[in-house]
Image 1 (cartoon, rainbow, N blue to C red):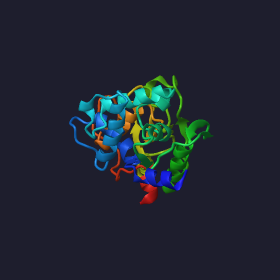
Image 2 (image 1 turned 45 degrees about the vertical axis):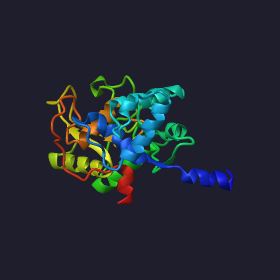
Image 3 (image 1 turned 90 degrees about the vertical axis):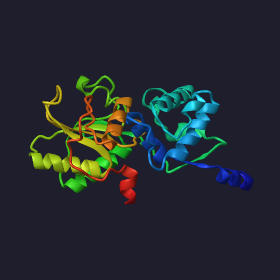
Image 4 (image 1 turned 30 degrees about the vertical axis):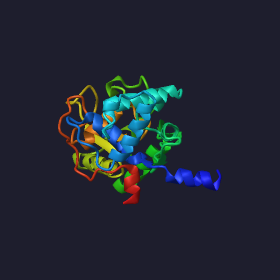
Length: 257
C-alpha cells in the first residue's frame, strides 16, 4: 500500500466491531428500540453499506441492529459463499472488512480463532482461553460435557451448540455454593452462564455457558446472550436471570479491565 493509499484508509470512518457485534446480539431481543450504548455510529455505517447493496430497506438504517439487520447481514455473508455459523448474521472480521471496503475501517476486531480439542470436546481458541481463565479464578478444574460446533448433537440443547462459543460443564461433586462460584467465574471472564436443573427441562444438572460476542455463535446462542444482557435466564420462557450478579463483560473487556 502506498503512502497515499494508507492516508486515504486512515481518513475513512471506523466501525467498532466489538460494539457492533454486541448490538447484534442484544438489539433483536429488546422489547423496544433502545440503542446499544456506544454502537449507534458503527451500526449506521454497517446498515448504510447493506442498504447500498440492496440488502436492507432504507427505513431500517437507524443504528439499531435488530432482527431485520441481522437477516440482511446474513444474506450478505451468504453472498460471499459463507455457510452455517459463518452466515449467522453476526459481523465477522472477514465479512465486515469486505463490506467496508472503501467505506470504513474496522477497529476493535474480535476473532474466535481456530477450532481445537480440549477436555475431549471441540471449541475455538478464544473459548479455550476463556475457560482456562475461569478455571484459574475458580481454583479448580471444569469438566466439559459438550462443546461447540456440534450440529445435531444433544437435542435438548435446541441448537445452541451448533456454532462456536458454547459449552456444557459437569457439576458432579459440586455443592450449590461451588456451582454458584463456577457460574460467577465463567460470567466474570465473558460467558453468559447459568446452572441448569431438571426442573427447567429434559436434562440433568449442569452449567451452560455461551461466550459473549463469539462471532461463530449459532442464532439460538445469540439469543441467549442477548437475553443475558437484558437480565433473563436464556431459556425459551425468558424468565428472570437466576445466576450470581456480576458486571457483564466480554472476554476482550475482561482482558482490558
